[in-house]
Length: 256
Image (cartoon, rainbow, N blue to C red; front, side, top):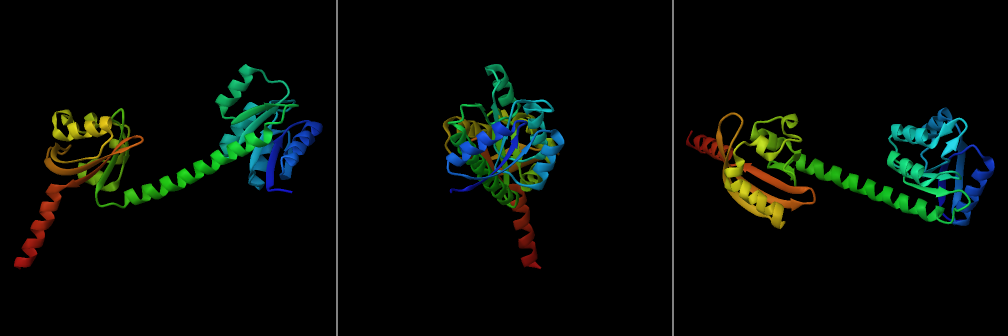
């Protein structure tokens, strides 16, 4: 017998449940399963065990796949949710997919069941790995001395670290979702904007020193390193004015 598979089956028919379990066993899995057919029973099952996959009938006397999807999404779990139904037309299938189902199959035509589950489980693994990497990357960026901003292709601020907020004299909520032109009025007329535009279009890193008018009315000099990323561009900044102040203080200390 192959790998263990924990399956929550939302189904009112015992016969259909056994047919599904048999198909999974034919696919080489050692199946641990539980059948539920009401909303309270599903909520209890989701709470007491971490399942590998949920297989759900579309329409039941006391429950429905659409409501089961809502319960599933409320749980916050990221596992495959696949509908298996004997009476689902194309319109209903599309509705279910839009509601959050990962796939659907017809009862009596389960040849694709194992491959569908394995495909969705691979996608779940990839999503978790990506989320882990993104979390580690975000932690790294948050700890940088340099300011860091991610600007999307439509010029909106997608990410900003603490250093960038300090440099730009703005709070995070003032920056998220705002365009570069809204954040820095007049930036379109600067060499900085030209360099960012070039990186956006040509997808090649740019390095430039330039000046920006900040929200407090001060004109500050910045050293910018601009890099293409899938979302748009990532901009690393050093405030050259603050660097000069720090150096000046160090020199004064040496004199005393």
